[in-house]
View 1: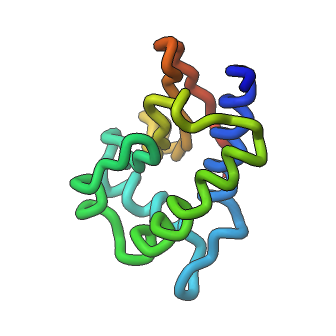
View 2: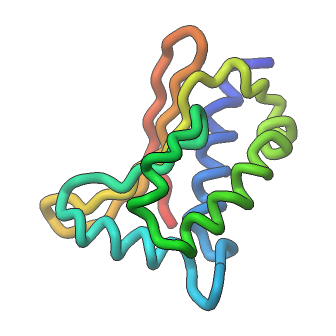
Length: 124
């Protein structure tokens, strides 16, 4: 595995999660995430893929939790399609937050087993 593949894997996975294809129970997931980010006023909404953090699920809507279940099942296959070994990824999570300019941002963050941290903005 090449470590440089982790960046594109994380970006594509996050883009899929917040993008227009993630439509659950009559609305897009990004709409729920935007609403939560605005309600949090500066504090980020975080969804951890690796490792799984179940306590953060209680702050999310049922629609988001339902979608997370599907995406957690898909993550190993998605990573394999990008030639990424998930054992080399120690942390992978996304943050959605509202900045001081009232713009909502989505960020994908990964930390590999060498300790290298990558942060990238994902546009929904």
